[in-house]
Length: 440
Image 1 (cartoon, rainbow, N blue to C red):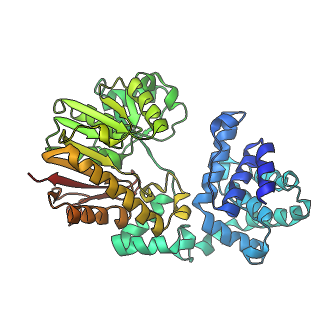
Image 2: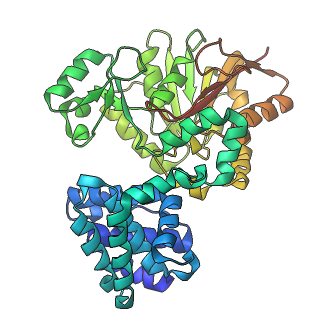
Image 3: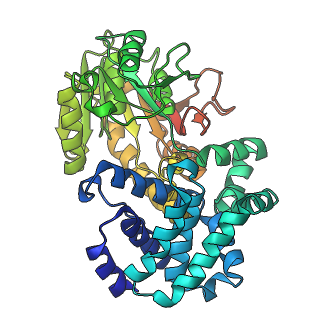
């Protein structure tokens, strides 16, 4: 199939053909690569492709069960070509009005000709037409399934979260992860949330009421065309999830005369710090090791007319004992961002969490010399895993007795241990944060 897949990828033109190749690659190689929008002939094709792919990966376990039932045999006995087409058809049939049912079945079955598998056409057609007739029965049967099948998450992942957060919060996480991520905005000091809301609503954008920040309607329901608006080009807002906005708010009351964002790209926390604490920060620096990510941050820096100083490269170029506050948004597994990147739940394991832990500790140990005595490091991730959060803090403190953990004041999303932990819900993704102080 690998050789066949490479040939299919070269000749794939339509949204369904490209989606088929993406799913085949996932089934065969456990790889998930989305085709860039520039490779489609129209925005509509690109949109359909992404909707189908995300619908499949978000519901993969459940659709695999449906496939076995429809084919009346174990999955190992269903050709991968048939599996991929059935998955495509199921996704489209569950998208409702977004895709016409005749197209969802007819054009998907015709993909067998694209793959040169005409002998599988009849079986695939029969499976999809049966699901079309019995959709409600299939959904009712899913209500009795295990959480792993019902919400299409690996059982080991659910068990970890249940042990850490409890059953109720874990169920909330699973339910949130099955829906597309919300898009939240941060408004520039050059405008107000109300002015920005009115300007976007006049252009037809729908903004939803959100729980945070209180009283600010800065969550966009549909983003199509948002980044072509005058407000965007003038730098009157940028996109940042509400959980990340909350991390910035944790810096209230901390000295930040000279502040560093140590893993800065694409710049969300850097620019939010600049806008939120303009009267408190005398020098703001953002550093990024990866050159491509740095270029992306530069573009945002220019659009937002930021005055922050940008550096590209390693931490060793920084002065010792230089910063009052260092923000470390550490690279992680991003299991708190599954609703945005649903493939994460199938491409992560504890070995990877522990590998990330090594990197995270290396970053903290490199940066510790660059924070002033009595200065702070705000360590943050978008992970739900203790391996990458609490354990990193514990291991760092054990090895560095000249640092101490400063507990956040009691409040919503503050754990008993004094850490900040936002979990996915209707309004946000996840974020973890811990505050460390260098003792004189």
